Structures are given as C-alpha cells and as structure tokens.
Image 1 (cartoon, rainbow, N blue to C red):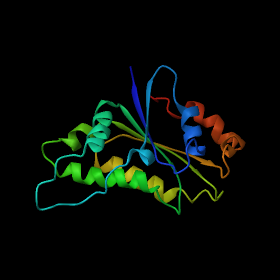
Image 2: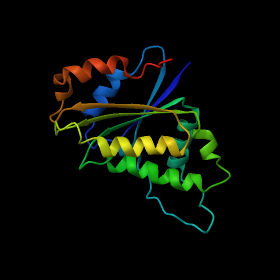
Image 3: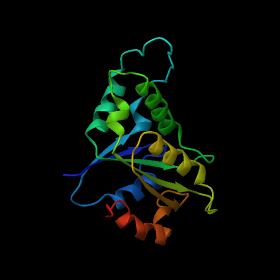
Image 4: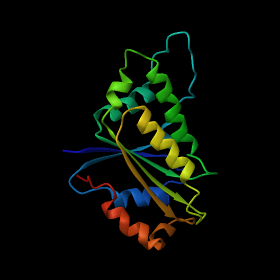
Length: 178
C-alpha cells in the first residue's frame, strides 16, 4: 500500500493548506499527517567539521516516518514568498542528515516522490514560485521525482473552498501518472 507522509507547516491549525491537502489525500493510500509546527523540532546546528550529534528523539521520529513513506507532501502556506519556518527548519535538518554517513539519508530519499501543496492570500500566480523552486531543487539534489505543486488562493479560514478550480484539482493532484 502506498504510504504518503503529509508534512504540515502552517501556524494556523486546520488552515487552508491543510484543508486542501486533506482534499488531495487519495483513497486507498495510507496517509500519515505530521504537524511540524507543533512537534517542537530543535534548532539545527551545523557542527561541521565535527561529527553530527546524536539525533534528538523528535528528530529521529520524523526521520523514521520519512523512511517509511513513498511520498512526501510538504503542506505549506506561502508566508512572505517562502516556506513557513517549520518546513524550512526540517529542510535545515536534512542538511545535517546528509552529513551523517551512518544515516544514509541521500540513499533513503532517492526515489521517494516529492510534492508541494500551498495556499497564499495574494492572487498573483508568481507568488509561490520561490517556494516551488526550493522544493523542485531539493528533489533534484536528492534524486527524488518532483511531482509538482498545487497552489491555492485563500486567506481567511475556510477560504480555500472558494478557489473552486484548485479545490477541484486537489481531488486528483496526488494521483500517480504513468
């Protein structure tokens, strides 16, 4: 069974991005939801050239969930043309994991599919471009298939259902294409 890990990163519980992601969650897949904003991920410290420190339990837990996933879906509202802090912090930890030869992080990530689901208040279609570029480059670097992004326009809680085109697209967004 396909294992999908949704990595939520909004400062708003049950925000528009999360609602859009739930709409996109395919039936028949095992969907797991991880709210990065409530996990309490510790700050990332680059310890190079010293060996990386042991993983904090919460970080090890995130890594374990990622290891068992076939698909990783970053669910991130666009804040100031960038990923929210919890999503960016996770990517910073990925940098450290790449430097730890015992983790085999690059090999673990290769082949996992990477997706992005965003919402933003600004209707300008160029607003999410920096976030999408970050994720696409991440996929390229880690030899992950980049499966694309779904961008919605919403501001107040629940507004995402008013973006009818995106809401409709969500139902098929995570479908695997041949």
